Length: 443
Image 1 (cartoon, helix red, strand yellow):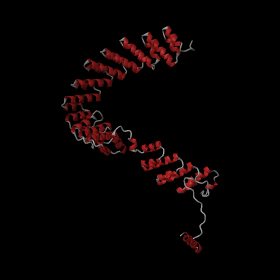
Image 2 (tube, rainbow, N blue to C red):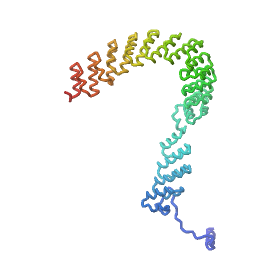
Image 3 (cartoon, one colour):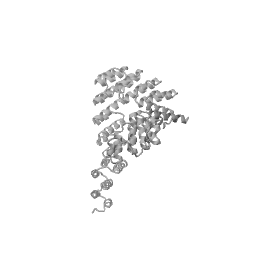
Image 4 (tube, one colour):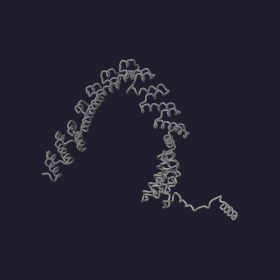
């Protein structure tokens, strides 16, 4: 048989059907380049160094095979990567000579193709995991979930599909998943997939409030829930058009009174509590305490006077609150809101008065304000707290009445500010000497 093949080949040669084959150079595999530069493109052979020829070959590479001319592994990997990108072919990454380049190639192709399965080709576990996580592979994103319910919700959020919650067979768990999806995305359409109607209404209301979107309230099928949802926007920029969508008569007029700026609409309300609330919101929107007097219920009336007095820095209005404790809370609220320690003097209950003055001393970081506290124990506590905080101005020390605390104030300020002259303001000689002793260079 071998002789027959030879005979046939000889016949072909003799008859001139084929030419005698000439020796051809054997191309080296792509991964193992030879140092030969016989195939260097025209122009590249003029470069004297390998680095220059490699860069030239890279610039002129028009097909993948041209990368074999490049000797430096890093440059050749760059060449292969170029064609891997163009062809979107991650299998070319395997031809990389450097492991880091190979991993980067797989990562880039996985990203370009939005296919995290390409990440599995990366040898390094950390890089492989990072690739999966970067592309949102739920198997990796949700592996830390504490239980099945959390894992399914995590998967649903990662894939952007509430239908993933159907994997939970328990209806309650499935609804919890859908609710979590709706609130986290946020996605009002997901609220409609809840099997529990009440939960669906709560879902829409939560989204309406969090997104400041009253239009979502209109998607609620239950009138009371829809009214409650729209009612949450009354204190904001309510419009007459929005108010008209409220089905409840009293709540609609409360809304209209705010939207139209007409307190007389409050008089159209039948329910006493709603009417009181209407007057309160109107008074606060106008900063006019007159309308607080129209409120029948003590709770809303107190709230109205307190809020207007704080907003307008008018502690006189606090006298309208009852019982005494509520009036005192009002005075304290005004004092703290405006940093006015004199207002604390109007407080009748001693404990509230002390706390008010202590609060203002802290606010101004001024230990001399502690002088006004009329119980020695709490006054000393005030001095100690403000001075020990160590942020006060030394100018406030001179007004501290007790010498002990005044000297301590100067001493601590001197050390803190590295200013020995403050020590000379100390009256008690031993304390002054101890202070000056902290500054060896002082006279």
